[in-house]
Amino acid sequence: MGTGHVRGTGRCWAGAVLAVLAVLGACGAHGKETTGYFLEMHKSECQYVNGTEQVRYVERYIHNRQQLVHFDCDLGVYVADSPLGEPDAKYWNSQPDLIEEKRAKVDTYCRHNYGVDAPFTVERR
Image (cartoon, rainbow, N blue to C red; front, side, top):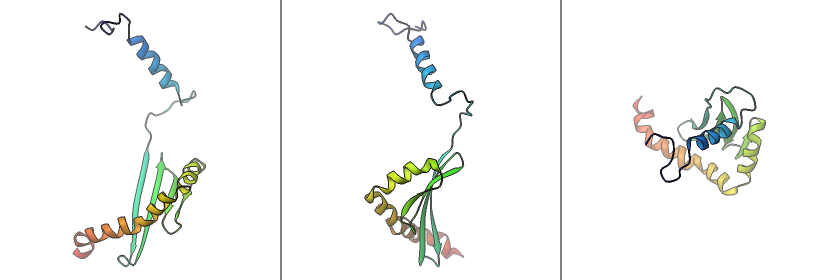
């Protein structure tokens, strides 16, 4: 036990693990110091005017405080907000089923949740 090798193999596994960690740790840094902390955020929001008369569904994809791409149901497509978001917007817009699902979120997500939440929020005034 505790000798640094796997029983039955007769070989040291610690060296192999260190080699793998060194290779994986070197990827992506390219000589720059990284903080080690990255923020990846997906936000969905429903915006209401006069109850459910006018409802707008918006999705936002954010990386390190920079919005990369968003979906606005009024536009009906994904829009790249930065060059890094262009590949995602192009790919997602090429999928008609996904676009239709996002457009339907106004009814399936926003209006539905408004009906569920209204007794506890809007109607309590």
